Image (cartoon, rainbow, N blue to C red):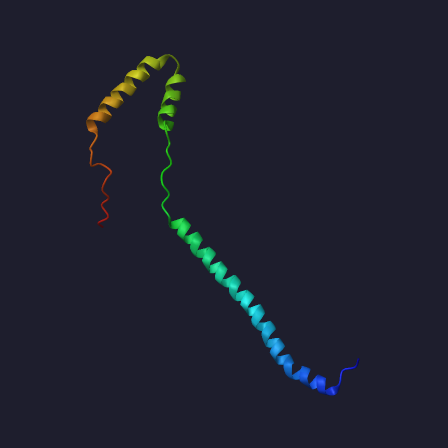
Length: 106
């Protein structure tokens, strides 16, 4: 079946609409990608600026101190006395308001 000249005239008049539709579709995809990129960037910036909660360290610091005492050799008695003295001094020198306020004045 052959194409008549009148059919070609109809097709040629519709070509600009088809082209515009294809361009709009491509631009829509590019716009969608740009929007998604901005959203991902915002989420990343928010994640960077978040303050994470401190994880429970458990007895990590004390374990390190215990390992020092174990590997100290013959000075274990002295190390235990030093540790007890440090604990006594720490309990005497503790200030309940220490570390609760931040001075941001210049």
